[in-house]
Image (cartoon, rainbow, N blue to C red; front, side, top):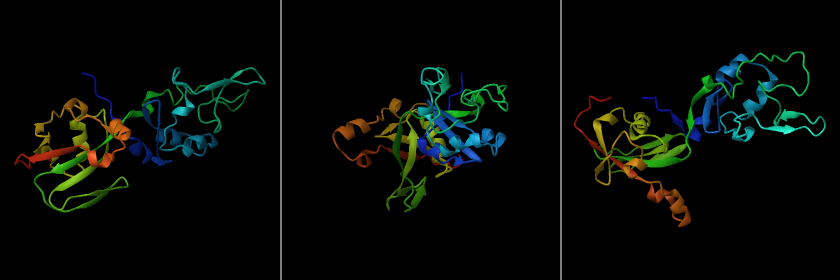
Amino acid sequence: MMERPRYFTPSEVASHCTSADLWVSFLGRVCDLSPLMSRYQGDVLLLPIMECAGKDISSWFDPKTKDILKFVDPLTCCERYYTPRGRFVHVPPNGPCSDWDSDIGQPWWKDRRYEVGLLSAKTRWIRILNTLTSQEQLLEVLDHVLRCSCLTESLLVPQVCSEETLEEILQRFLRFNSHARGYTWKHQGQILDMRKTLAENGIMDDDLELDQLRLDRDIFIPTILLDFNDDLTEG
């Protein structure tokens, strides 16, 4: 069985925005370019990439060829890479250049070694309601203030990827509750299949319909109930 790819939200990509920890997304892929930054440290050709650290740069690419956009120079009638932000690492110069190393192997945008996962096509909000605890908490996660009920512990988990299974969402939730595996996950009284996604479990994404009806999405965030299994051996 092939290993499932890991999905990331745009917020997760955006958190990697320094020269020592630099991620970008493009054409649905998420790439960690930190090794590239280290290899070419101090090179002026890194500047366009640094300016877009943590962002989606799909506009740089032709979706059909998966290569950098090209155009025909009206002066030379030659095909050139289209780089309005300036030429960057692995893009050849416009003309002959004595210091251009043509033996670079795969350019970084085609090198799968930089790929760490895929960008979620649609992120979702979910609320995790622990039916066991009654502690009031105020949590701040990824710049989102998560408010908890004074009767039950309710966490509004940072946006999750619609492509993720419940088991993968559970991995996210472990940062809040290290014993999350000791609970049964339910929605509207039904036990959820942790091997399936939210949609496959019947928890549909109604964002489009809510927007059409001009209803507040926050009121209709789906809630998953955690029922304690009386087993705290799972950590």
